Length: 98
Image (tube, rainbow, N blue to C red; front, side):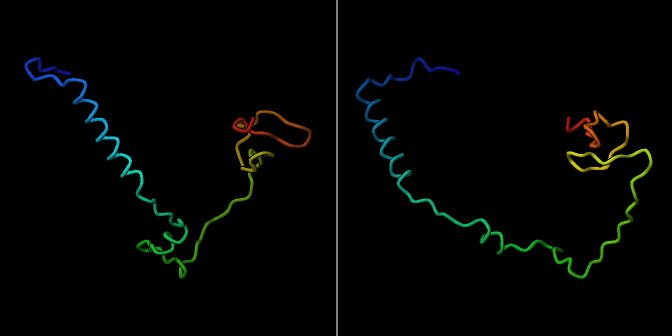
């Protein structure tokens, strides 16, 4: 940062006055009460455009687990056999959960 050596310097009395005024200003700012709002109540007031999906019908094709897939006993996701980390009795654990 550049320094202007020609500028007049402040003495200790001036710097202490500035800091007292700054502290008073900060105290007044901190004294303003914070408004405590319930986030759930605030969120109820907002309506997103196109958010009404009550008339929509989802059509998703669900495939059964394939022969080369397994269900992880920890995260319960269906994964490919290449993701097997280890087997604990009859429970198969994937690499991400291990």
